[in-house]
Image 1 (cartoon, rainbow, N blue to C red):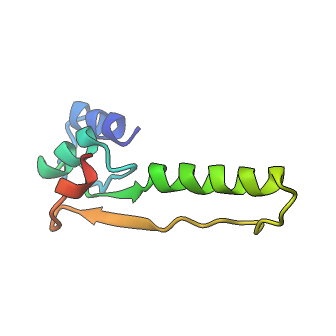
Image 2: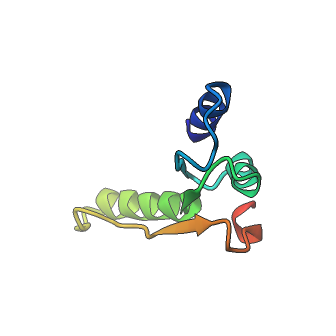
Length: 89
């Protein structure tokens, strides 16, 4: 959606530095858009860790063990000032 917003800004003829666009997921396309100054930031969500925790919680529930109500997985802000090679797995 952030890339779509960047496309709309460009199509409207608005300079990219007038509107800051932020995305989510640190996708390869999003990282490329940041390199081309079409997006200001993105946020990396560790889907693998989210999935592992969901499976762990499911197994605990199957065993009738208690699980915490919220199982937070930290997000990581990604800017164009960072090396983004570890996000493009």
